[in-house]
Length: 408
Image (spheres, rainbow, N blue to C red):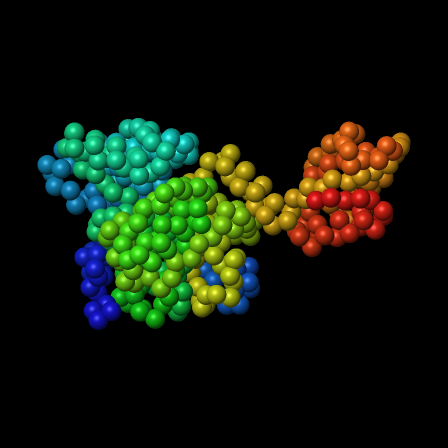
């Protein structure tokens, strides 16, 4: 990069600095929290940039406000429209409310209920359309054409990229010695903005984007040299479930980002659980993606590292499911089938053995009819809570030592 302030997106460091002035008094400078447990795992300092504590619960308010604040009076008169699974929706609704103009948001079917309710609470009209964000975006374009409303794209606009880039400026000020910045990535607006800001000021810093395996549009697009839509997506991380990179964001990621990595659903669950338990941070699955990447490959990133928590808007019901999934992925739920003698006290003896090694019984089910059972046996299905995989292996070993037939 010959000129560190010039980019193929048309967004410069000066644009990002100007966006920061626009956001003064609107967006907060979110905390940077040192993470001792991640630092120990990575072998060097790791900090968490807590955009989950931003107004509306995610970074999206930054870009949305910058974009809407620059509309002309004629454009403001017709209002704004957006398409979003939730976080961008809240950012647009808040920005429009602060500026005093109407907003309409199209959401894909199945968008999280708390995000919908929060968007309405900020003053937007919410309309559900289609299965994916791309479907909602088509409807938003049609609405804009019919009504004259200005479409506020979730990521593919220079003002939005500049607004998200202000996160990069804060990171460099809060952790001036940073060597790696890891960013959850969907359409690429946040990653693009941060990469432009960071590379302009510290070209030696590695900038890494993280996508969910089931919605990873960037790897294939970068391989082909153009944005390529995914045929389908499946991930719990709705905040980064975007099937095609934007044209503007693709160019920035191609030119300024060092690497894109992907993480599994199990990794996202484990990361979300770890953040709740260890960092006392509530995040949505997308917001945990950077931490998931560190948990997957703790020695892969130069430290000091900053992992961005991009959002914290999660349905409490989904939070419970993800925590349970994370516990199972970490080996803390153990499901066993154990054959025991069909005699009085047989079950009590089994449960005593389980208790003796410190496992907690969550559920017990008897099965008396099975071709694999002897006539004098009963099969017991156990769901146990353990302290992790080594403890789970200890439980199974203890039962086998006592003569039980044990099946996972």
